[in-house]
Amino acid sequence: MFKQRKFVSSKGKEYTLQFPGIRKVTQIRDRAKNKHGVPSDERIADDVLEHVVVSPKMRIEDFGDDIGEFNEVIGAAVKFINGIEDDPDDQSTGS
Image 1 (tube, rainbow, N blue to C red):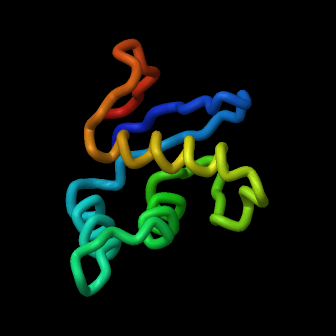
Image 2 (cartoon, helix red, strand yellow):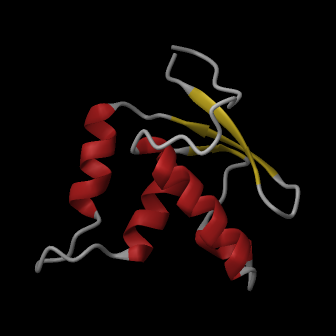
């Protein structure tokens, strides 16, 4: 099983993030770039919500007009798949 981490947003909503594997992370990074090599926020968010945020399952539209929650969740998920741990006492599970 891939490593998981619980993330609680500043609004108290809990999310489960799961590392999808190095190949999938690499694919997410590659797909996120446009033809000029510039990352697309929309593509990153779509892929992160599909492959990294495993609970609750969400799409961009599910955040409604709450851009703060959206940015916080996507930011935490991107940091997680890049190996950047915010909390040294995080609640990671798996191996």
